[in-house]
Every structure is written in structure tokens, then in C-alpha cells.
Length: 128
Image (cartoon, rainbow, N blue to C red; front, side, top):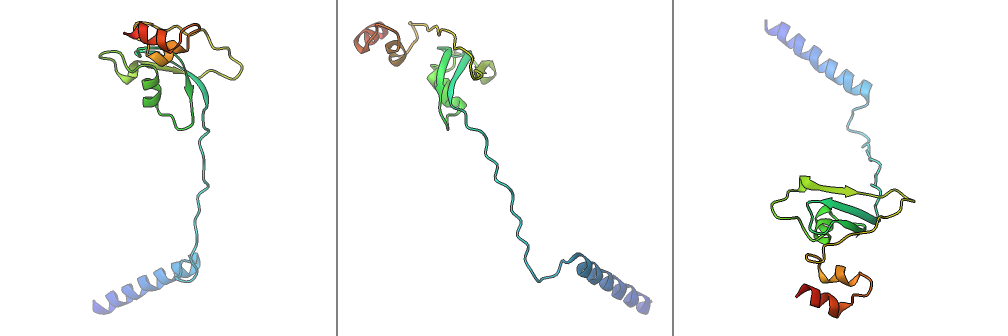
């Protein structure tokens, strides 16, 4: 039985060496594997935020902005709202932006100042 085992082991070793020789998997030359670098397109422009945010409307979208940044720009989430209650619309090139409506009772000063005829002093008076 010992002789048969020895023959079987020698046959297995020979088979492994044969496979290594046929496939070129020797310890000779190293093979370098490189994956192509893919970059996702960077969005810039404006995005419309709607749903459960305090000030829905168009907001600037810059490279590197996160969803959290956009929600913060829109005045944050309404009380008790979740992220699944937010809608984001990215206008297609050539589409006209609709007029933006704001709630002057909840708008921050910087947004009020963007309105025609309202400067820093008037914006602060509306807030306080």
C-alpha cells in the first residue's frame, strides 16, 4: 500500500508541475495588472430641491457638494422629515429655470438679500 501511495503522490506532484509549466505560472517574471481609472462626471450648475426642505428652490451645485450641503443650502429638513421625502431635479441643458418662491418667514438673510430691492438692513429687519 505504501508503494501505491508513493506513486499516487508522485503523479500528483508531476501533474501540478505540468500545469505550472503549461500556464506560465512560474516564479520568473512578475505580471503587472492595472485597472483603467474611471472618473464620474462632475455636475455643476443649479439643482432644484423640493419636498421636505424649509426653502425649496434652485440652488447652486458645485463640484464636491454633497446631498447634505444641498439640504443645508435649502434651509434644512422640515421637522420630522426624512431624506426619503426630498426631491432633487437636475435641469437639462437648455431648460429654463422656473421662478423660485421663498417663504419669507423662514428664509435666511442671504436668501432675502437675493430678492430685488432687499438689502442687508431690510433682510435683518424681516428676520428679527
